[in-house]
Length: 196
Image (cartoon, rainbow, N blue to C red; front, side, top):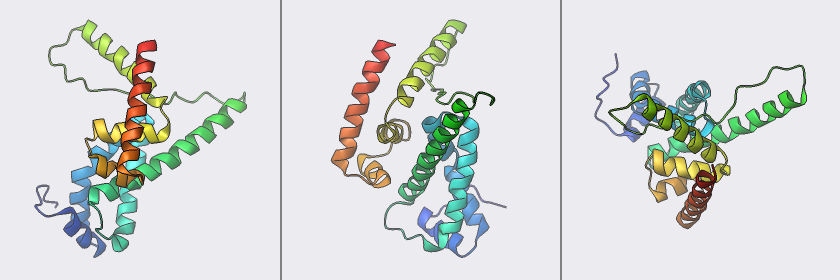
């Protein structure tokens, strides 16, 4: 039985996972599974894909536990795994979509890029719900239109609330490059939202 309030560092848990401790792995899973699902969902726009890919992220954590070295924060390492898997999945989805589009006998795929934002509204009317849905769809479409590196930077900064330094480590870029990505992304999002 897992103690969900286990009070130890991520690095100590990873050392225990490396020794085959399933309870330590479950503690990490409990701490970060929902954050990773949300991150992947915001990037890919598909809840089912996000859940599947999150399983792959944590399978990778389990398999890589023996080689894990705490040079950076555990969360930076974890998000790096998620980013790499997201980029690979995005490529495979593009290839699959291209083959589907070029095959007239195949069924159309469900659209990628759906996005639901939690706006934090407490007293909502049906009109509020409709406006929130429209805004979420516009924001999702604008976010999906960003280049991959800009979209990753925006999601990591504004949804996962990571620092510029952490984002730089995750994306393998300098802090100034992350700042530049975010500035360009904000300009493009502002323009796209104003045009829609």
